Structure formats: C-alpha cells, structure tokens
Image 1 (spheres, rainbow, N blue to C red):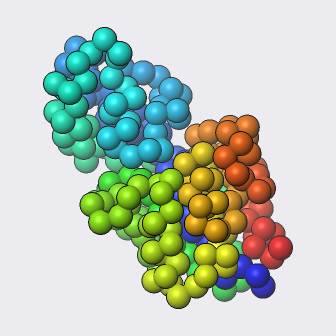
Image 2 (image 1 turned 90 degrees about the vertical axis):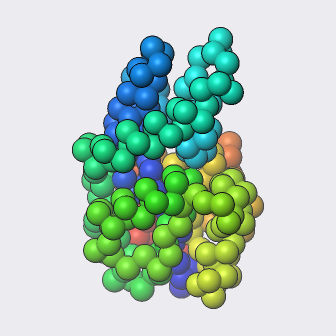
Length: 218
C-alpha cells in the first residue's frame, strides 16, 4: 500500500457545520444592526479561519477596524453556545472511517477552525475513531494553505508527506496538500464546487465518503 495515512479537513469534509456557523455569525452581526446572510452564502465565507470569516461578512462601507475585534469575540461567544445544534457527520463518514481503520490507515485532522472549538467538536462527534493528531488554528503554526502544520503532523507521525492522502473540500485544502507533497483529494459533498477543487490542484474528486476506501488502495 502506497498510502499509510489520511489527513482530513474538518468543516465541510467530515462534518456539516455550516448552519451553526451561519447562525452564530448572523447573531453577532445582528447585535450591531448589520444584515446577516443565508446559510448557503457561508459556503464561500468559511475555510480561511475565524479572522477571515469576520472580514468577509462585514459590508464594504463599514469601518472594519472599528468592529473587527468586537465581532471576533462575539462570534466566538455565540458559537460556543450553538456549535452542536445542527452540526452533523455527513452521510457515509462513519462507514468511511470504519473502513479506513480496518485497512490500517492512520488518521489525523487539520482545521483552520480555532483549536479550542476543533477539540470540542472532535471529542463530541469523532472520538469513536483513533485520530492520532487533531489540530486547529492557533498561534504556533500558520493557517492553511501554508503547509507548515500539515508537514508538522507528518513529522509527528513519522511518515513522509507522500504517504498521506489529504481529503478536503476547498481550494485552501487542495493548496495545502499540494504544497505539503500529499495527495489532494476533493470532497464534492462539502462547501465548494468541483471547478474550485480542480483549479487548486485536486488530483481526484469523490462524490461519496466511501470512495476513499478505493483511493487509498491506488
């Protein structure tokens, strides 16, 4: 077997977190008399971390600097109360993770979500499976698409980057995988479309999580 590990994105790949993120951000915007957005719009807003999310939702005519830090804090407070209201594993994820485990693949997670929320969500939804490393955004390593965190995970697992398949749903993920020397696989059930994934370096697109069981055999 060429591949020995799978590195996963979290939001839009393993879990559908969109509604809880949208509700939290919209509530924070509402506190300042600013309009919210439909949940579908957040598919384009998320993926770059909390700071980029807040910058993307602020209307152009607003002085972003005057609201930015306040909205960051309020978004985190709102999300802390509703991160598990609507969030669910995507259909087929359980079967995929069971199958990868049975095949002896080693699993880890790398997210641009703040690390405290990443750890809570992992513990609540995914701790049934043995993910060796679960890493969210923090001060120590730059966020994706910088490959530093992905390379750090490979080093900690004592595997070469080429031994990893990287499964994600956005250009951020595909660029991270390419830069790290991992095989980039695009998840079509997530937040972004096929064109974005292919343009960002995806070597293969899969429509169902169970298809990963064949990918790792290649």
